[in-house]
Length: 594
Image (cartoon, rainbow, N blue to C red):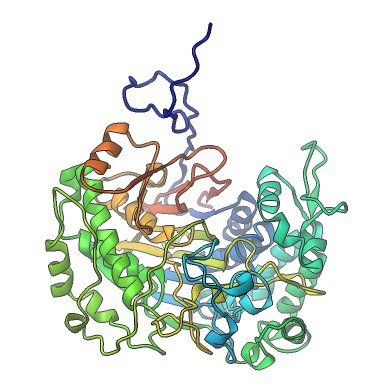
């Protein structure tokens, strides 16, 4: 008689459980080979091979890093439509030797007519989608026409091209338009992404017409030699109109009228003046010193501010001395990440609408005080910093959100032969955004209103013309005036802790880019401590003994429960190394020197 398996024992994706010797279970081990090119070459990393190929082709044809990033970004919205597109927004960070670094900011913005009353609370404790805000009646801030914020991607990519590119915008849009017209092969990942949101995609006829097959089911390829293809001819025409007429062809004229008219017909408040008045901006990045390096990222109400604060706190401790992914090191990371998140949810918002202590949160004295409070032998609740100490004059209540699922975001990087480095994160926010495709345009619109706290009277509450508190945190790491890495992640609130660990893996622990991205991670964006099952059982048990609410997450070929990164590392001689997430069909492609 065969004995049944022991009750209460569970394998973590092949990882050994307590009481077992290493290697007693089969394990599915995934790995990637690092991409490499010699000095004088270039490289693009993106979340899909098709998008990375577009950017690599631009570099081969003599384009610079911004050209490659812009072309890759447009293509990403076609081949990975559940993650980003021209109906969303984002941030681009650029570093060029001898020039001031810059951020091109093109976030989504609340329509002028937006008010908290648009989203009456249902009385439930938390929503069941991306964030743990109070639940809204009919999930109107998550799915549908009222969830849409003013998109910024077209304006942002056009501005980046105008200020820093070397090729015409039309040339950079053309590959994306061709992919939309000809269609992209449907692989298993596309089928999976459509299937997981099938119920909401099917609600909207124009959306279903694009992303479901002729039978109203998720598209599926049976034979790779004859793949099903995802074609988006309406989107191809829209991209062609932007290529011909520039960004104003999106924000004014027939396309803008179609977007605003469709939303108004179904109860949305985004109006033609919201589109006509949208403007992207070039800004100075937030720069944080970290062990002889400088990390450049967006500031303000973004994930960049929380990334910068996390690194500033950790700079006070010897991570290298504690060792890579040791219990003591991870315990220290968790405390820094929790402190930064506590301040984020208490104080961060659009600084043009709310008094936000951006400078005070990174003040050396304040950071040192917070870092000195970390405990080596236990973990308890972490409070936000003192209002008086930070100079906060308002009495708005803090948000106390939770986190329940991954986000709809993409990340890409490009480095050219001259050492110019670009890091871009852009998003629709939730997977498939609002799920609304505007008929006749092919434009899948964001659900950016979901970033706002629907509870009135908080820093990040809904208001007309306000930028929501986003999680995007693209980063370029520099040393002695030269870029040493461009990196970033997708994954909602998981992005910030992931990016911090990527920087630490490179700087503190001396890993090259692929091992740095592939190493198991933790995440502290919830009250639980999310821990990769790839970390040893002994490490997880030690963290639990220190007082952390450890929640083990399995990572396997079906996907990761952590943020999904890509990155490019530049060595001192100019050679490039590229890396990509183990658990996502991402790709880094090098372009050898001519």
